[in-house]
Amino acid sequence: MSFIESHAVQLLTDLPEALIITTASGEIVFFNDSAATQSGFNSDEMLGQHISRMLPESHRRKVNVVTWLERWADNPDPEQLRYLSLAGVRKNGDERRYQVRVSKFEDKADVYFAVVLRDVTETQELTVQLRHAQLISNRIIAIGEDAVLSIDADFKVCLWNKKAELLFGYTENEILGKSIDILIPEAFRDTHRQNIQSFSTDKIPSKYMGERAEILGLHKSGRMIPLEASITKTHIDNKLIMSAQVRDISERKQSLKSLEDSEARFRAIFDHAVEAISLLDASGLVIEINPAATDMLPLDEYVKDKHLWELTWWGSNDSSEKLEAEEALQNNVMEATQGNLVRTRTELSTSRGLVQIDFSLIPVSDTNGEVIYIIAEARKLIEL
Amino acid sequence: MARITYVETNGTEHEVDVANGQSLMAGAVAHMIPGIEGDCGGLCACATCHVYIPDAWQTVCGEPEELEQNILDFAFDVDSNSRLCCRIEVTDELDGIRVLMPERQY
Image 1 (tube, each protein chain N blue to C red):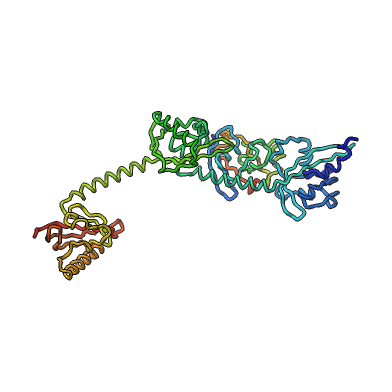
Image 2: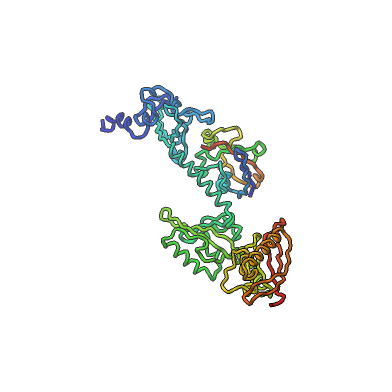
């Protein structure tokens, strides 16, 4: 008798894997120490019991354990068992998930099943949690307002979301595995590659929109698209993946251009008007003042964020008269705040002396009828 | 190409286009549809792509083979119209099908 044969029972009892041997009908005839540790049942309790005591049938799953043992003993294909697990129960009632392997052996006319159980509860729960987290992330990427794409170390596209499809015109099937070059106008391809190459090796993990210069993309149709991108890189198993969130900034550029044009037109009028004009907010604070108006002020007077009546123009050098003039102006501004046009003649103390002016306060309302600006306009009548 | 509607147990519907030749499971996984796991990748070995096929579509989907029937034993809440959708290949004939998902795959 060999050493193994003489110690076989002890070896099986001490085996680090949980091992249970049953008859063809599922009656337990051997229950090793690991099985006891794993299940909470001891060997004495389980010998003679049916295997379904540990692997109970569920009202929600039809599987019959003995049928299962027979089936898999006949087809012990490890690939087929890879993901299969059975619901089990510990002595204390805890539900567990067991991965089960089974082999069949015969002793004379009797058939036995050797069942190895591995408790995979925690691993399986973790896997499910990870899958769910991944599902959420993936769905967020899928609906993202920015195009999201990834490339591998060979610059081949390996991830492509719906927005990327809309932005560049290529479907996922068309682009996966293709070089990122096709998304860049030919004239910029070399520079773009050099930039990516340099990012792939530098120590910064991510670069954000705004930190990077605008780039030009190429739509499938040949149209150029001004783009902004945040990029990040991950090394997984020494494989580099670089990902980008890409935003089409055509509309933003167009809006900016319109704003700049509009501002230029406004400035042309405002800065070159002969009349003194100041734009006030609804409380009378000076927001803008034109050169014709500042010309009238003593040099270096800071006017922004002051109320119009606080400027040095108003009234004479006599302090009581000045106060009176300031109060009158403040009242007029309040009148304009109510939406009323105010028009007066007054004296203004300018850098060139007193001038008589035709002075207007014109309220400007928003679409709800609320006053948002007041235009103060002074037209010189006679220089005294 | 067929337009497939995957319906979660809570009633959420996911209507997607799946190319002919793909399985219903692969279509669901590609479109990141919650509730269909497809752990084994389509080997008919894990019972995590269990769905219910409405009666009107039973003929088009065909009968499950023995292997699929065996594996279905491991799925939860199996009914007479249960199928593992990795075993159902998409064709034009499936255009418009609604498949219902079980409450759980694990």
